[in-house]
Length: 545
Image (cartoon, rainbow, N blue to C red; front, side, top):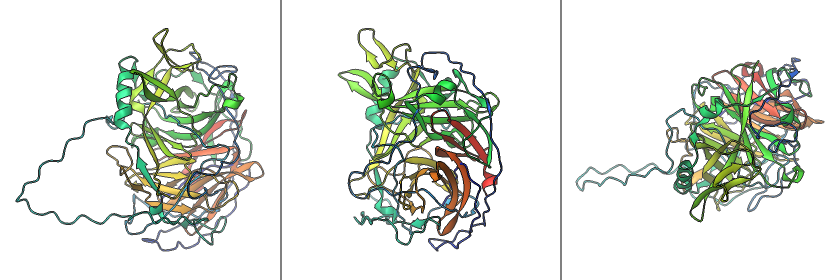
């Protein structure tokens, strides 16, 4: 199990209770947590700065932001999503990597973030040159011939999960108490499948690469064009554990049609925690077409910020795109998605797709396009490619979706846990009024960076959280951190919790969003989404223990 961390606003912390964990494949020690409040706010000035038309100043084509949208609609298929908002947390201290017991099935589902309807595709961004780049579309060697007189191999171990049970209880777990600790759910009833788009989309990406300059995240980091307000910020609500942060420039802070949601960084990307010798934070923004001039859907953008020097944070926006073959011409279109959570792992950017699963983008094959035109894709009259005035695009390379025989769950957000063996993704769902919002864990192949499995990928852990309005969640060494909005009036809270452990509460801001933990710096990052109050900030994880 892993611990997940979130920062929330305005409120003094409450104490925590330690409740013994129900035995499930081995006990976990959980330390007594006491929330402490410390006043800390940052304030600063804005310095716009932008190099091309894709900057976020007032009136710029690709600036925008929006507040938290209303509750999600019902999911297609089986079970409606669960709600996770308030969790009183208890911590489960566990040193070292956490191994999953193949014999202890657990279940869980998740829902997407508040304020987003079913969303369409979203595209991750920024290429990274860590861990050798993988060619998703590389040829696979056929199996070697078997010698007829070779010794017989022992029978393979039985699969961890049998066929899906078809049982999708609603609520997913009984006797759940708000803030009283997470409950286990049968993880094997939640399954993904790889749509196996790697070769098909990889071919289009290669064709685009013959027409456009290709680069990785390091190339984008050498071409950052916007300055932040900082190093100080003011966050609405008292966040005592806050240490430092920054605010996007005035155009991005105030824009009405782009809203920040997911958060990841170089601490997810690789064990060193840096790319091109820089510490990097990446944020996803989704587009609110009904608030934008022209009513043209632009999808999702990813902002890469260099946070190596918190006194001088610079950044640039890039656009997620879906490549496709347009009658023999390689082309791309926007990815329409809420993008409530993102994970940068090796050369991939995983983007949560609320009612589907995960979209995967290739950060090693980002491309530079022309700027100056507010349109997207190939323009036949000029033979040029555009991306709504953004200079860099990140192409989608793969997709994972819930299987037809899976219980339904929403993918409102996602986080990486490097403390498990193997590394894993933790997805979760937003629920407005229900406390049984689910968390699901998915095992990663550390060599390829993909999920383990192809046609049938069952979750390896599942939980109902005991909190409403989860906007983000993560786990680390057996502890879970939940970031929930509107827990005390408009202010959110951060909860530290775990299975069978009462939640420890930390004050949070207005409009809290996703969580990202960098183990190389011990920083727990989060950000806020509301117009005029868009801050990115971190706390020291030790202050939350």
